[in-house]
Length: 187
Image 1 (tube, rainbow, N blue to C red):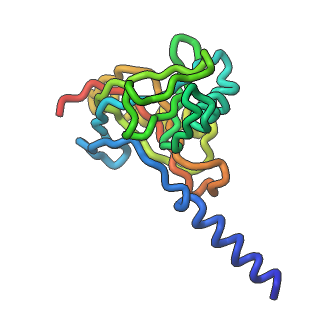
Image 2 (cartoon, rainbow, N blue to C red):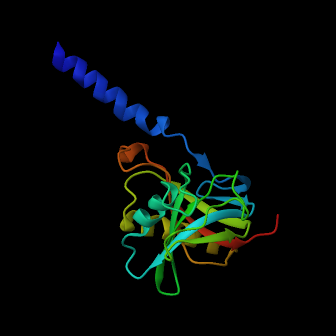
């Protein structure tokens, strides 16, 4: 009987954990949908980012910043997605800041590796997929999105972006991942 209760408890925990971690999500409007992808219009948004040659330690540095390792010792709620892209040969990881923050009330970083930036709003083509947030899974979906955009005559304006929404404890089947491109789109 005790083992059955444990199984029930852990099953409930595993299936509800992803929904308990309700984080603020970057706001957007869907302006076009297809069977494969959607075009979203995002407003400007504030983010923190870390650039690194091999992508290591970016998450830890950003997490430390939102955990209070900033000049105001202010804790900041985690938002989604966490994005990763390659820029000028470096891997760049970004956390979006909650909407209550602006350039005037965002605490300054204590680490010179953490940078506060404004991401200019615009149009992004997005394909959504589940499973692990592995590089192979991302590349597969990035390639599908790129091919569909080419077929539809939509011009890509930036590097591919890997967006992840869930904690590493979320079951792969229940994970939300996205491959994105900034695109030239006329609404």
